Image 1 (tube, one colour):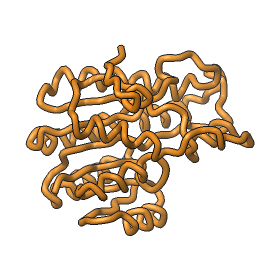
Image 2 (cartoon, helix red, strand yellow; image 1 turned 45 degrees about the vertical axis):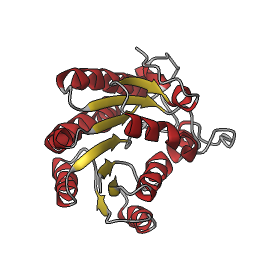
Image 3 (cartoon, helix red, strand yellow; image 1 turned 30 degrees about the vertical axis):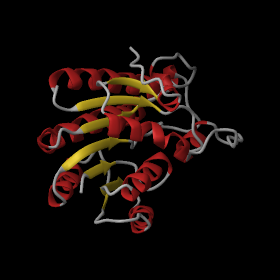
Image 4 (cartoon, one colour; image 1 turned 120 degrees about the horizontal axis):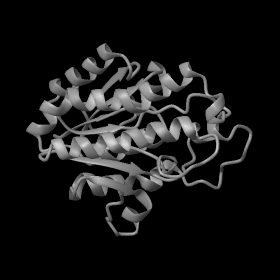
Amino acid sequence: MPVAVITGASQGLGLSLATDLAASGWSVVADARRADLLGQAVDGLPGGPHRAVPGDVTDAAHRAALVAAAADLGGAALLVNNASTLGASPLPRLADLTPATYERILAVDVVAPVALAAALLPQLRAHSGRIVNITSDASVEAYEAWGGYGSAKAALDQASRVMAAEEPGVRVYAVDPGDLRTAMHQAAFPGEDISDRPEPETVVPALLRLVTERPPSGRYRAAELLAGAAAVTA
């Protein structure tokens, strides 16, 4: 039974992906900060065994607990770095972004995913594994007020490319899922109606395609994967 480690798995895209993987016979090690929501989410997953490991991905001890849980289940074959933060809501202009908030964005959105991937590499190498780093179009487009989040995701894109070059036995993907109807996206647009955005589960088939088909490492857009064109973008 293959093992997936998924951060930010108590709701939204992380939970949708965990549910589909569990239904396909995967064991899931799930992370989120709120223990109550995470416990409910993991209890509702089909199959098993699964592990709920609540905590903050920026905490080294918590990352070690995720690694240990995956090892206990047989070793990770997949890491999905989905946990992320906008830093503030409403989003401030870059010149108004406080250093402390910016540092928190970088810690959650860049440093933690890279550190967790590094800690899991021995397991991933042993299982010809995959790393899926959830990125954003804000990493390549200049949207006003998205400077902190967008620059962090741009750094994650580059880190993904470098890790792919350094780890030829592991597939490393940066995936732009597009705008989705999630709590984080709502926080980016407080008070606005985002009901026109697609639900997170609509892009899960794109992520599963990467997991099952193992195309070359690179940056992918979910929309292109759903359309059947697995084109790597710069």
